[in-house]
Image 1: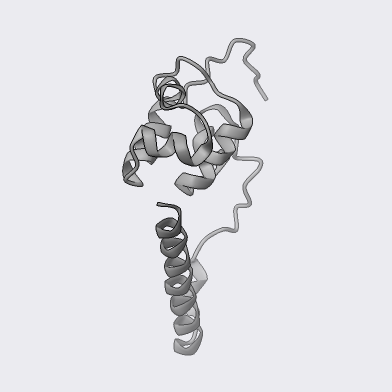
Image 2 (image 1 turned 180 degrees about the vertical axis):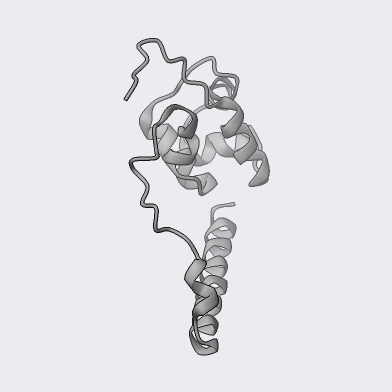
Length: 119
């Protein structure tokens, strides 16, 4: 494993893309996570890295993981199991495929309801 002493962590563009894709303004986000809109702007322009509590709140609000946000700076190959895939889906019976499909639809509905409740 190679470690860098002076890694310049820049997550601003990912935060901005996540905010925009979720339909929020900087002002709305600042109210929801409890900081100023100026601070959100500073995060998005990499002027500041931000506090861990604000970063976690943003990830929860945008429905992204810390791994997604910091993926450019983490060696995730060793952390993620290689068995995560839907390759077995093809071999399932129609009954089990239907269960998987209905579960995905249900989880998407819950996620959308959660987002609507936040806005």
